[in-house]
Amino acid sequence: MNAPRRAARRRAPHPAAAPLRIAVTALSAALAVSATALGAVSLRMARTVLTPAARRPDVRLLGLDPAAQTITLERTDDTALPGRYGLFTTGSADYLRVGSVVKDDGASVTRKLLTHVPADAHLTPAAAFSGWYYDKPEDLQIPYRNALIGTPVGPCPAWEFPAAVDSDVWVIQVHGRGTTRSEALRAVPVFHELGITSLLVSYRNDGEAPRSRTGTYALGATEWRDVDAAIGYARRQGARRVLLMGWSMGGAIVLQTEFSSPHRDVIVGLVLESPVADWRTVLRYQSRLLRLPGVVLAFAQQILGSDWGAVLTRSGSAIPLDGLDAVARAAELRHPILLLHSDDDGFVPSDASHALAEARPDLVTMETFAVARHTKLWNYDETRWTRAIQGWVRARGLATED
Image 1 (tube, rainbow, N blue to C red):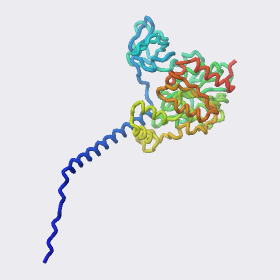
Image 2: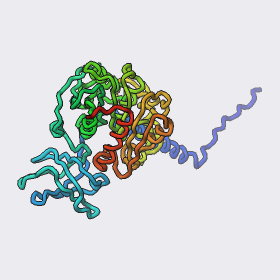
Image 3: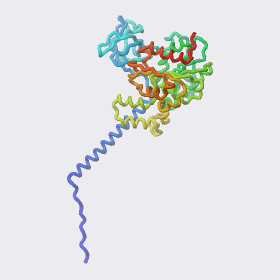
Image 4: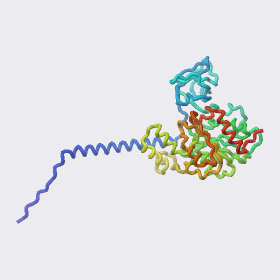
């Protein structure tokens, strides 16, 4: 006699199971979308850092008074600064010099024009406020000549301002991100008075020098080779002692030159103006300004520092953020450094500069400014800025003035 079959039992689903599965599925989808969105923001952040950018308008021009020779601008932390500045415009003029603030009502700032504007002038509202002041070498009324520096990417144009007296001391000026060598023109008279030849250089992908294969910045990791080539050029012209001065990202490039240059034997000192001493510090600061989640910053740094990320950013190779951290590598520094930075820089925080000064007090002299903002120390307090550089240079026996 066959045993009775045991009927298969199927458990009926719990009434709450279906809604739970729907909720879990929806949550998983939402998380996937969020992760994708965060990843996209991280990639955009990484690409932005590496992509050379043209100058962009950052302030609105609100009024022009040719009779009074004044200009009214939207009020920002930069446009309200005391001192002399430049203004990139479009219309009947492409560049103006502006002077002191004559009126500040909290919403707008009226400044004195230092470039004459005719009565029939017409300027569009979009403008860019700048610390350049001088925008071409002729403005300095100091003799100069054009030069070409042979570099691994091709000939890079440079301006050479010979010293008025025979000297074997040169200073090589390295501009920052998104700018050109005109940024450093402000420093030429300071070194000229000291009897030092100035060489203002360009480097790969800056809009004046040749483009690299990828056309992207390497944040100093490759650009230093172009500066190293400039040192070689200076040596062939008679330089025996070379100062390097870097502005903003130019500071990062100069520090990499200090760490890696085969011409280290002729380097006698570094002058760093609002420098990037550690890119992670800058990225962290910028992400806070943009109110980005910490995970976006962390992933952006992974993208920058990895070979797979280099494929996404089209940078050709990973960016060595550890190697670009001058604070962590402070023990490798060999030459004295004058460091100029404003504690309210607003773009490149001074934290890493202070850390570098604390790590190597035997080499680093730091001049801390306030209010001056990013690379506008000369504009804000020309007298103090000039005295700081000239006093530091003279104290090291590098001045050759009469």
